[in-house]
Amino acid sequence: MPNLPQFRDMNQMFLSMIEGLEKIEGGYVEADALRVKSGEGRIAEMEIIKRNAHQIAHAVGRPIEIRFCITGPYTLSSLFAYKTAQTFTQLGNVLAKILEQNIFREKQCAVVLVAVDEPVFGFLDDPLLDKGSEGRETLLKAWETIFHKAAAKKAETCLHLHRTSDTLFWEIRSLKIIESHVDDPFYESEATKKRLEAEDKFVKASICRTEFDALIRKKLEAARAGKVSTQEIGEAWKQITRKSLDPKNFIEDINAMKARLRKIVNRFGFERVPYAGPECGLKGFPTYECAIECLKRVATAIKAVK
Image (cartoon, rainbow, N blue to C red; front, side):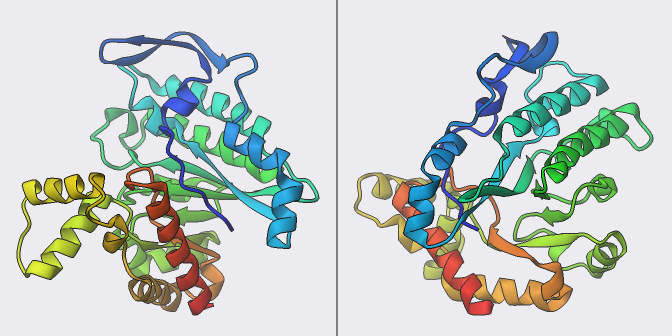
């Protein structure tokens, strides 16, 4: 399934579509009931792909299958100066309506996978998510609202996380696929395998790192056999900006990606790993060409393991 590097802010692109919000010092507040702004619910990238579907399908020789990503209600709520349990409900309803305007299935082009991105979930000490709390229950229902809408439109459902220590996501009935970052113990755990089988859920294998500072640090430390300072990473960025250093040198190699994918497949079985890809978006990559090269290597690694 093709992906494209997206250089827009994943939070603002959705918040800008929502009416009823007010920006104050410290974040957003709900000034009124949240709703989709009139005429603002369509995602530009999706519209362009849909409009050019016939041409793209002809070029690649097959119909286009699209993964559509939505920033989740919990991550958006982290930008609020004040929130309650009902904030999750309101955001879930609005995001489900945005999804409804962008999901489609036509002869040459179809949204086959909907991913809700929740990079903030599991990182904050949030009383709203205490066990047994109203907030925890309403977040679960907000996720369910979005995923149920996607499943009703015959799209597969995926939750993108950066940390899986809070296991609330296992309770989402309409969720089928879970993905996290490369180093998350989720991919190493025998408990994950048992839970996948018990809940009949699946994983997307994350097979390459995408945090570019970390990629620079890893490459420099391997070359110098020692720790690298923040200043040295900054100097590498200056060289990249001056075009005296090729950023592609820092992308992980295909063999490392293949090794990760094989390890995940061997642990969970091919039938539990329907998708593989980068651990996260590529907005932090220095150039579009560098991001495309990363995706090419990912595609090569996946084809080799297949």
